[in-house]
Image 1 (tube, one colour):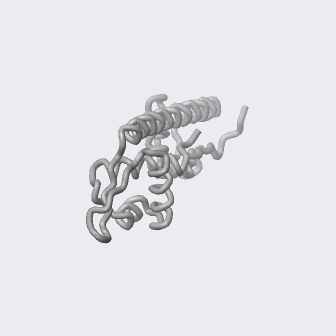
Image 2 (image 1 turned 120 degrees about the vertical axis):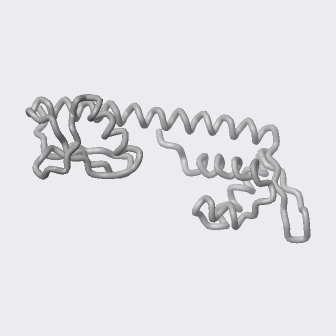
Image 3 (image 1 turned 120 degrees about the horizontal axis):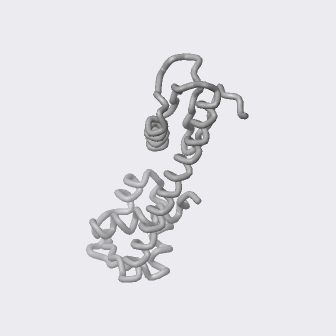
Length: 158
């Protein structure tokens, strides 16, 4: 299960507020890469649930404070996020090991790896660990990384 956008935003908001109580909604929106209205919606929801308190510091300046309940929520969201990332890591490794087995059955000891990012890094390390060399040579079986998905191209399944 991938982290929901809502819980990811909540975690980011709570972390930012904890470190910078005088942060503005515009700053938060920029940091999260979302609209100010989205930040406003999330903050109102967190405030209504008792996770964040808001106080007026100046006429147009607000200060946000995380409540003890908000700290507990942040801790839960952090643990959930870490668990989800480890699950992703395990799923990618298992899938790449299956791909490596197919590649070896076909008599190959090298593959091409197309894609970048953390998932591609996991693929690279798993291949090397399994004795498969990564090469740019055309015509080799290819492990393609698209976002969080991976596919094996150029090998018949047996």
